[in-house]
View 1: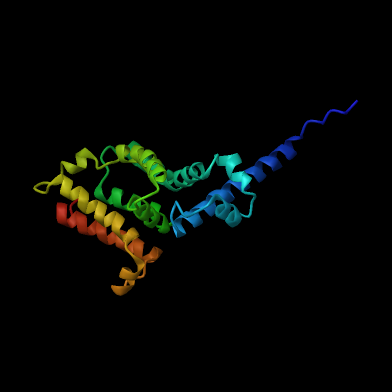
View 2: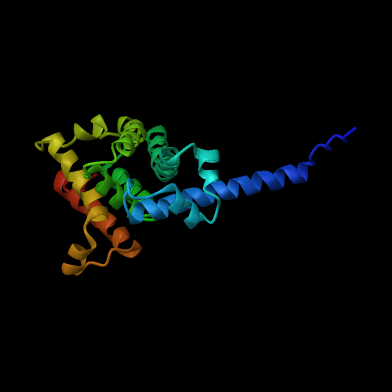
Length: 214
């Protein structure tokens, strides 16, 4: 008669849970590195597993397939954006231009390769399933803080939709600008540059729209 396996102790369970979490984190980090350095279609689950230093079966175990891992990776990347948007909406009935620009830059600066990857992905001919994931994950954020109506109403004689496009250009282009073009114009795209640019763009918009009074 075989003996029953004794139940695992709390410490053992905690160790196993931590190990599982480490594998999951390693895979998401590896996926980020592989996808941002290449493109969705050319990255294989074998390559991601090798980058993470784990068995390829772990991707199927934790995420189901490559698309599931991709969605988990993107979700983790945009989580700070979503949280900042909710916090901004909760604590301020009417966000300012400075709030919108500053929050976006603070979120993008730690990982500037991610917006470049999104730009390449959304402009590619393939990767339809990956694009669907992007639309699914970003739609709630766009609906949460598209461009506050109360703020648009303060644009005076300016067309609100043109103001919105100007803001999108000031916020997004610096992160998707080709590195060769940046070098050509004498820019070094690093944390210090992006922080300084955020302050400059805030001052520029505030002066242009509100005469520096906002």
